Amino acid sequence: MRGRICLVTGATDGIGWMTARALARDGARVIVVGRNSGKGERCVAALRAETGNDAVELEIADLAAQAEIRALAGRLAGTLPRLDVLVNNVGAWFHRRVESPDGIEMTWALNHLGYFLLTGLALDLLRAADAGRIVNVASRAHVGPQVDFDDPEGKRRYAGWRAYQQSKLANLLFTYRLAERLGSGGRVTANCLHPGFVASRFGHNNRGLPGLVAMATQRLFAISDEKGAVTSHYLAADEAVAGVSGRYFVKCRAVESSPASRDREAQARLWEMSEEMTGFRYPD
Ligand SMILES: NC(=O)c1ccc[n+]([C@@H]2O[C@H](COP(=O)([O-])OP(=O)(O)OC[C@H]3O[C@@H](n4cnc5c(N)ncnc54)[C@H](OP(=O)(O)O)[C@@H]3O)[C@@H](O)[C@H]2O)c1
Image 1 (cartoon, rainbow, N blue to C red):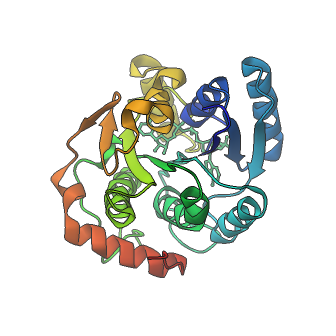
Image 2: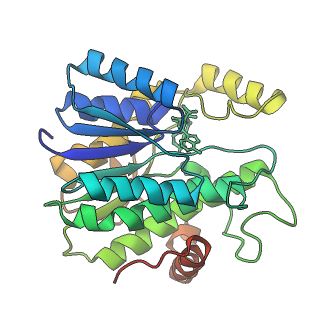
């Protein structure tokens, strides 16, 4: 990975931090994207110290805010010659319905539209790499629901976990459609993954009982952040998956995802809706 340029979102904590650390250990230039500059600077200093790699940098952006995603992409386009790896890792669940700065339900804005918009805006940089890789961190939680195309933002009825499941299903639908658009012989690949049940800070943004339950369950049953980053790192860096695209991975193995995620009509419909909601049309 020496000489490769990698960007990891949601890298100031949890799985993203450990993914950034693994890539920094490989010798890559790693761009950590976080939303909190103090925490981000501490994170970057720790990563440099732990890995001995000084090519770890910080970018600040609220990835639920489309203007900030556009500004981030603008800075990247203005400074990077190419992007070898984009790891869309940022994600959260929201027990209560909240809206993003754009007035979009937060789970949908952050977990799905954020991936969609940043990837589209970074596509030229990824195409400038020899073999650009897009890695979308999804979840096994995608199994179960369908995307509610009539009410994706839960305006009529909101349930936090269902909204999270829907957003993770969207990660798969998006990845499959994207891989198809990029083409099988294309130089840019796109894959997604389930990291495992990980004892990160996931869910801690929810106050009261939901946050406490998340924390207690993680303590009891979950794997470490480091183990949770293994499949993300594998898809970002391993030669074994060079040229592999449009697949869903668990424990570094390509596995079948839910029937709903393979619904081509839903993939196309989601794409169209996402272009509308972001005001961004992917280049052909
Ligand atoms: N943990 C699990 O068991 C599990 C299982 C399946 C899938 N996943 C997926 O794994 C991914 C990473 O989750 P995690 O468990 O590592 O979560 P985490 O520990 O809560 O870390 C989330 C990261 O995202 C950042 N973030 C949150 N909102 C943001 C925003 N609006 N703008 C920019 N950055 C923001 C956080 O920043 P701060 O440091 O400022 O909070 C943090 O760096 C998510 O996509 C999640 O859906 C997790």
